[in-house]
Length: 406
Image (tube, rainbow, N blue to C red; front, side):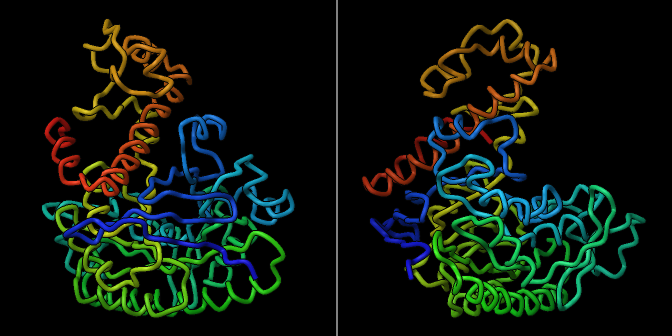
């Protein structure tokens, strides 16, 4: 049977865990490290698949939970799979739905992110059982799976590891993920250990179901990545990496919650334990500083909704840091966002025009801003890869942050 993926390391980053590689899938090659653009519902908001191709987007990631609810994974299967349904012929990934365990559970109705600062007061919550916030949760976790109410119509659903894998097989992405529990950064150590045991048990069940479904495949085999959890504790992160790394997965995701200040340490702990010859994906991370530290510490793939989400709100990446195009100073600024940027937006439009579009609430503003931000982040990671190959990564990083202000 044809292999789902093939991964080869081309060059290692001296003094670090980082590497440049080539990841081959049934729908094309991904040169790693690489940024994965998120198309949650089978679409990258405000952009067409053709625009993504023009931007050099190597791979897109869709959301299992959202597509299960709408339009339904069986409909996507009957349409010929998600590649055909959304007219994307390049590599594709789907997540497991595990993040929604977090976002619809403990995080529902709150300003709680999977990445927080160590000074965030939410980290001071001592016990999950003492939190009485009055906000109903849409997801309830049990040892066998997760029951949740649809955020669309309130209907009740139950997702098990086996169900998640079945949905992802119906969607047909090149790379899929094992079902896991993404814990909140506010959880105590006892709960983190309990959730970790559950994630490891779910990983085994995901793998068994995946292999069963793969036996009947005639084309486009799918790769399954196991997800490492463990929160902020080194002991738990290393334990999870050892347990998941010993299973017969095609690659690995690094998931869960982080404190911003120790994210790079947590990623390093994990990648020191995982098998070197398989690809590693850092889930939900996309800020430039985090991309650099992730690459240094052995991450091959990143995904994040951030670049397109902030673009739709008028925030744009530049070499000197982010700008908000709604600021008054841009109303009469007839320069491009960046002089030497190669994206379609910078070649053809001024900051004044983008400012006008956002102030007038025109949809084109979101499109032009998303084009720029996707290009900026995609090119940034491509340049990191080239710097690894050229042996100039340290110089490139220093040069970038000399100008870029967080």
